[in-house]
Image (tube, rainbow, N blue to C red; front, side):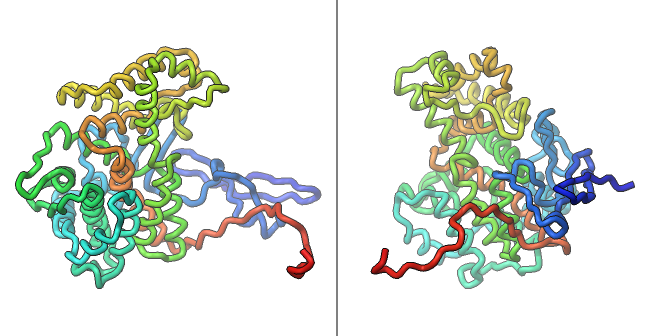
Length: 427
């Protein structure tokens, strides 16, 4: 029996269908609300609004649960790789050996950029933000004249592999451009993550060989960021894709949304906070005291999460990885010392414990990437590389849904009422 919710407004009473997800989530279907009552809902930030039904990722923020296609993130972190997880998200199931091999071969095939792309990179100033370059160059990929290996528009497997592979090369070239260094071609003998680090840090006369600890840590960071339900950037990809914009244009828009400091730039904000604490000669205890004082204007970055009201499951995984990697690398960094002390004190401070303001994934990912020698300017770019499979999965899901409609939110108008035009000499 279909459940309904009853809405009463004035002398009107209507029944609205209640939709139930596979994990018991309930939502009131208000698609006919305006037609039947003339009302719309107002939900700034869309925190209580479901914009779609999706089978990609499940989150239970109260219980600290994150699952990709039904698989717990903890199991994927222990047993899977970023490439396999990407295939899972995009195709809805774990690949068999042949499918994974084929996907890996496609990633290798599409790694090089057309030589003409170098002219595009040279057009950017040396101080151009890597995220600006990334967004522009993803859009450029949709032009077949700039890419000799253009995939057929109806072959989502080829398109997915091409975008996932080339975004890593574009990211590395963006970094090299910012330093005035020569571009390094991808090495077909290297796997996805190791190849990215090679293109980032090698020189023509000396190849950079990343340690297995660094490769594993970056692989884990990418996997944990691969999708996170209907966040700001994923919602942007779906909104743009709802107009039937192509995959590249939609994902380029996602890069723009991710660029913001409240989204993908959050781990950068963590490092900036740590640097401010260190340079200001402030102790971790003093920083926590300031964070609890609402009049201080000081904000503790990297603690708490809008969705998770318990520990962010990704943060728990990265914390263990950070402890292991930092020890093996023997990194000595005063900012990392500050971070560890903040974490230690916050986890036993009643103020933070009672409010469940635990360190989140941004706190640990920033620390890890700094320890690996990745510059702060590239943090959000790496987030974009990691999130690409999720964006592709959501674009594909929406594009294949025959009932999908172009996104067109409503508004409550609060501007001036009817006025008459005043000629300029009378104003």
